[in-house]
Length: 97
Image (cartoon, rainbow, N blue to C red; front, top):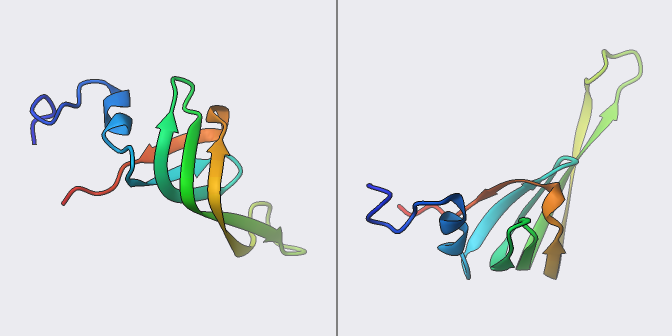
């Protein structure tokens, strides 16, 4: 699909077209969010609703090499969330298949 025909010419155009849709957000600190995008700004501050947060917690195993350990996944749901833009690594729009 040609990006000029879909109205995507700047990176923020992709975010604008994802308003009111469910997006995937990767954050610093091994955190991931999925939620409905309501607002954003030039700093990538986001307002999401119907949010599910996934946190990866790596617990080191005694005697193992650094970086090795068991991974626990914690999940929680929130009705509404403000995400500060400096923690945002990636925002993925919904798949448009």
